[in-house]
Image (cartoon, rainbow, N blue to C red; front, side, top):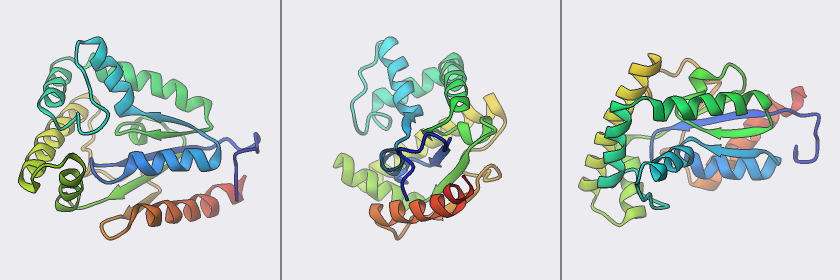
Length: 198
């Protein structure tokens, strides 16, 4: 079932999961399949990082020394995150989109919210392969990034990323799934839970 050419369907899908869970990959695929706009919180923050003088790479930048430096700056200045979240809330209200975001499941009242659950060691292994670094280095970078990110959102909005699952309509364990299996599963869930109601 395709929604791409049906303008009567107003879908809002939020995809969330910790780094290395595959959320960005599947969010892009879902947006393409259903003819929806795709918005990435990470990409939006990278745009602000560029304005602040950083040079984010396409992959692996967030776990790099420079990316972690920007993360530290975000901890000191909440305006970076507030600016993006305000923009995404406005976009989210318009509908017909997939949001790849760590905050919208909690902040945006509308939408179907999906969490991709993956163990830290699984995510670190994926990061190590992607960035061609050691498993130990990948694990260390992920821990540092996630500890700081959790503190940012807890301070700003009061929720604990990766620990509070109350906003989510569907949680998928992706530890033993290939990316195409995750995509196919979510398509089935979306079509049964959302499209049949439209």
